[in-house]
Figure (cartoon, rainbow, N blue to C red):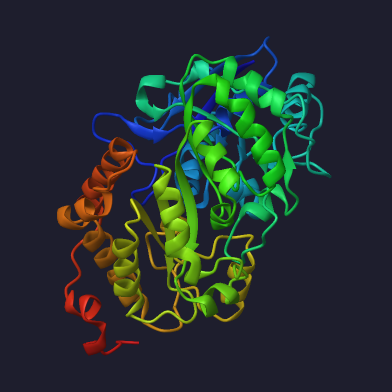
Length: 445
């Protein structure tokens, strides 16, 4: 069969491509699907963020993956292919949460992890007999002898980091806004370290990105992995929980193994709010000390914060920006609270009648789609724009990143990228004083 796998276009300013056709790091979903495809089939990858796919090609099967903000583009492209009589398969986080919706736009829906399902899809199509429309695993896969992603199919020059991989899946925590447990389960599964090392050695790349949702959740495994990475001479980054700052040996090994940057979900500087979203293992009173531990080791910090949580008011934007600047967090990633389908947050807000926008293209954590508790939806949107623009002024960037430790190059490159995006995507709010001086603000709620 001739198979086309398509990366869709999303919204917001995360994961976009520049005018020159450059993107950040490559995702692993489609390259993994390609790796699961037996060699007798021809596989082509197309990035629809750059151009529309060839709708008139003689494809036997077209496969899409899609996050919620990408799914409208997926459905539109799928419709074009199906009008031409082509068979379309859709997988990914959104279709796993809403398989019946996806089934309205696809001949085949893959729910959850593709391992164990994709080969069956291909076998059923080749057999030509009756097949189900929705494919779903009864259990989570065992992370052994996994297919190597087909990175050779990527336009590698398009990405700042094309070599991405997973060593673990799942997360032991259960935050109410997170899609991870819906897709990968709450269990935490680890690949054999030797197989991770072998995958890295199979590529010439020296810059990598671990796509794990929490690489250090099992400290013993993480240390074993980091020790094995040291001789490889690579540099890399990952997502990790703030709990890594409590283990000096873990942080030292992280750096020795080539870890140069880390994405951490701080989410809020309020203990009460963190408790309400089941993230009380984050302790804001420990943030600054933990940040210093990472910075002393030359690790660039990408810190995530969520606006619009219950308990937030219009003052949350300035308080958070002040904290980011005081802590010298290199890259702050601000998100508007978004109730992704499949999460408890979605169920709770839906039941309360607090979701006012169900245009999935807006579910990118950059659009206000809810009625927050402590401000209006408009204030949530404007405050988000204000916080991004204020954080990424030239003066604030410089005072955060100019430190006498390693990693300046990484900090400068990442911050400049967000400086450009802030100016491009975030409109100045009509009343900035409401957010820069919240004590004088009167909510329009």
